[in-house]
Image (tube, rainbow, N blue to C red; front, side):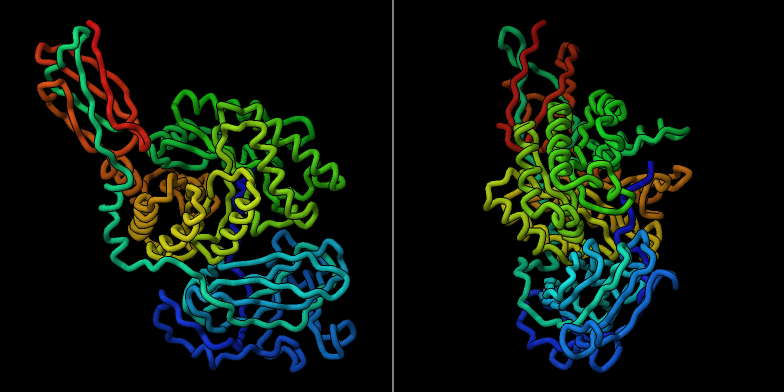
Length: 589
């Protein structure tokens, strides 16, 4: 089974130069100092191509992939347009690009990219992407569009994640053959993103918020069968956080499988399928779902009280051969019916076993199914899942939200679903970082998403450790930083690593353990935070009424009591966020 969490924006080969004309900048509450060229002095270098290439540059992964020309033959007007021809398709859309770079943008300013385009392939997809202009080529934002035979206007709203001139815009289209024409490209400032102002002191006060958000005051009273108060000592030990500290899981067998599973149990209390439940992997042949594969996961889950999230019911990506899946190669009516059957069948089958699903994965960045079936198909997916299991919690899931700049687009999509009363119960926020962690920036975006009123989960965390050149010590510090940021945020109820072992990780070097299963400093950092720093373990003496009172983290506790006569009792009890915080035990000797 291949790892389908591919690198979303690998090291782009594109390099070029771009200057942009933007309107007068508005005042931004969180605006950092800008040391580059003035926004008002910037120029957009001829988006009509009438003056030739100027700062535009054409790049391709191989010489046979495509070609580029300026032409008047098919121009939208009597002037010149750009023509990109794809001769052979590539596995990645960014293998053929038309680029400009080095234009100034300011943090949390929104910009509108507009362009006109047409194409000869009715299935052709053109993507506009904003990426860091130098290594490690951090992905910021992108939007795909299907290209029609006639000229059409397209727009994209881009929110700058930082103030910089180290940025590039790329038009890329290597996934489908044919001719792609571009003209009248403009880029203008279009307001600011209204984020909560987060001062530096916010992160410094994380421990105070953690104590307030993640802990409660609990009382436990013990008596014998006659009602006499238990007199003695009681040891309390947190054995499981209510907060979900999780990881993706890939049970692939091999000599390290036992260690792999034990390590997951050592660090985490919850899991999520990496690939096993994705439709195209789960049901590779029509009517033959891999039920036995999931049985293994779920049996292990029950044995170890280790809940697993159902990731994912629908994913519109066209990589990994997913576009050749048996359901997608048929007509649209067949695809819709197959999708409905998949959701209804599997959510019904796993009722009371999978309690939570990512119903739609990456609706912002992978719109292929929307191009075919219309935007309302996402409504239907959630409704079908809810009907199949009304008790299941249904999530949406997307990247480039806290580790990128598509926060507004994602929230707007969710808000529209809420307005239509679609049963969305939580927001999944991936965190595939290609830059160092900025706690205040992450917090501002989490607050912004939390304004929907829905709970948040960091569903997929990792970092481009190699691309950023992080030492093992720096990696551990960055991982601890994002964990503390999430755990101290009131809207976040879970945090999942997207893997913990380099041998089963999509990102080189991002695991807590290296290929030989040697722990890195990050392994200790993660373990110590969850199981030592953020834990509760106390030995208390009962008061005259047989009670103990304590403040501790929400979760499951092991209770070991011994009275003054040496009698021992052991219990397991849960003190949860919405519980009364009081428990009564009666020992019947």
